[in-house]
Length: 240
Image (cartoon, rainbow, N blue to C red; front, side):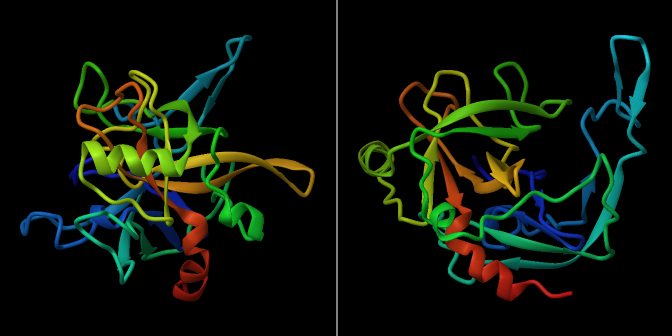
């Protein structure tokens, strides 16, 4: 994924989102571009309010989408433009977000096992408004399932085919034909369902970083920033 004027992100508390460093880094973006804010409570960009109709014909509608200004952008201090290592950033919002049925934070893994996991062979969710087979951007938020891949095999693939050396703070997923994140999905979530306090919750385990061109190539997985490597940085960087 190359830098795009719109990226994805994941809300982690009432004031902060996680996205990719290349989405906000001045070293990666044209000088004329500037981050203006984030949009929450959005699904279909062609409607002002998103509604779902149940089998009885009753409609459940979210409120109007919520645009929030960004107060501070915090790229990881060791972000590497060439290899995209440490491709993670925090966005501090100008106001606190009130959580409800339609807006809420995703979980971060705090226990050591999840933080160190590369999720090889695990089935995970990706989501975003990025490019599809027929359009350079989707009007609706799409999702798909991808499988985690061996990091060592992925390292060999990128070293051989793209001359990029991946590191242990990165992870790979996908590699199935036509199922992938793509341009415009950068910064978005790689999500793993996991039981926490007896409830099934989604955990943010990866951030969309980059992948093959074109997207969705058989045997060529996408690369994600492994969030578990950065939990300590996140915890010590955010403030009330």
